[in-house]
Image 1 (spheres, rainbow, N blue to C red):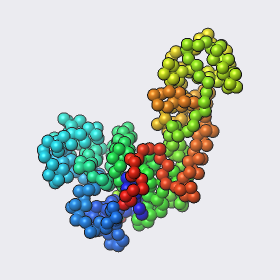
Image 2 (image 1 turned 180 degrees about the vertical axis):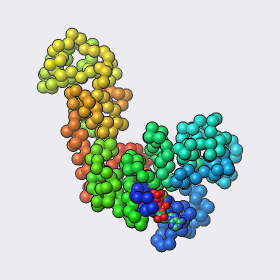
Image 3 (image 1 turned 90 degrees about the vertical axis):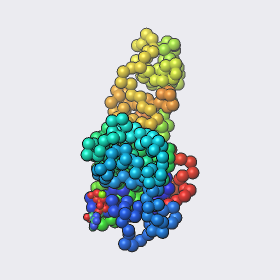
Image 4 (image 1 turned 120 degrees about the vertical axis):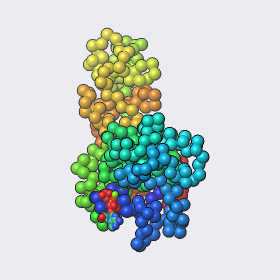
Length: 371
Ligand SMILES: Nc1ncnc2c1ncn2[C@@H]1O[C@H](COP(=O)(O)OP(=O)(O)OP(=O)(O)O)[C@@H](O)[C@H]1O
Ligand SMILES: [Mg+2]
């Protein structure tokens, strides 16, 4: 199994299949009985174990904080080992507490037993990030936090990953989390058997066997809609007008273009309303405010969000916007279908494979420096 430098790889599989063991072998808390583990090209058993671990942040399953040490002292473990001065360490501790949404004033001097399970997990994440290690091992780091906080932590981690280009090995039991975060997903079966190691869209579109299919769940198709962003779909152009003109003028241009509907935009090009030709004929003036419930989607919204907007909108379309909320065009359900099909085709091994994420990866971190 090869993990590319800068990738976030998700390990999933049934309880007891060896996910935690795999992480512990990477930082030598457990020595492999056979086989080799290379990091940046050199065998990890050839490196001093302490030195190795200083370059690897480890979020232990179920927190694993030192109970007799304060939150701040827990986070400062590695910086202290590295001999950072007090000020620098204290600044870093507060910065990290902010990052994981724990108020530093309130939490830095508490002890782990004075925190909830989810708060302890977040301190564990902060501790692993403290010395900015190039490699992160995360063992179910968000398992005990509520869905809303989890989503925020996932978004933070994605942003952090895109910014810093760390190599992350992440264990989860939540397949949706694996799809959302992973450049690749490794599916393990009992006995540490690696069943499939692939980009999320490949695992969804082409599971290796029934075991993987079962793991993915019955809604693999819908999950694929959650992977692609609206910005990657080319929206259909629509005739637009503004409140400055009369409905008759807009109607004339719409009919002349052979279109059956038009969109009213504001001075900055943001969508305000959508009218079929028949409705334009009835209007006295064009609106200068947005119609409540207008089905607008932004470039970062997923195709699942777009489908949702299409399903609840009366005309069965969504209005796609780009930078600054400017109207780009309309999207309908068949266009979503086509976008998913296209992704499936692009993701197939014959055409190169790999991850199709639009998500930014730092320049030069894709192929350079494989580990
Ligand atoms: N110290 C140990 N000595 C002997 N066997 C162990 C030890 N630790 C774990 N095991 C066994 O090794 C196997 C893999 O355990 P591991 O903790 O890696 O599973 P896991 O995939 O992380 O499971 P979970 O999803 O429940 O965390 C299990 O069968 C477990 O019982
Ligand atoms: Mg485990």
